[in-house]
Length: 200
Image 1 (tube, helix red, strand yellow):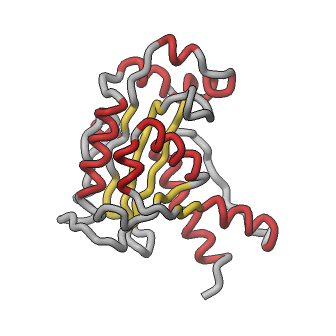
Image 2 (cartoon, one colour):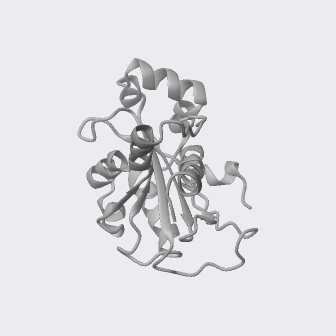
Image 3 (cartoon, rainbow, N blue to C red):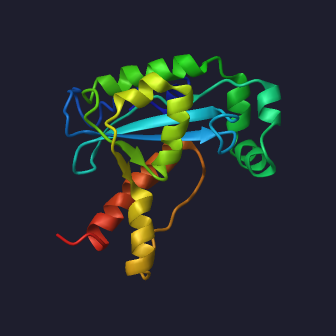
């Protein structure tokens, strides 16, 4: 599998150790996570994105490009205290400064990857609190947002239901706030709820 160092430069990782060939399948799911400078898509911007393709049983088929999106020092200086501390501590802020990949380039690379695996408008957008990511895609990467089905597969819905209906169930997350790690955790969390919360 292509290492994260390459994936972070925007290289496509089609996970050859998992599948020897890629193939479009409308049952495949597109998982995506964004890191942003804040929560408002009108004033904040995307600084990192990653994607994973799974089959309908949540088996990983491929990990896509992990992209630090270049932003100016002026833009990064506008981050609030939490984002400044979090993204600075994880090394993401420095990666964003050093990146040569624009928002448009990041969108194009991600689209090229998911088109290998999933037909247009067949997969819901999958992730945790995914409506927030979708708001940013709609504002900053409309072609990518439009590729998804209009429905959302939001793991946080199950989290909220489990907290109310089965509060003894706890899924422990690492919360590194790095895009690829967050997606992997979202998939693992959905597997957890499928096993322990969703009744067959």
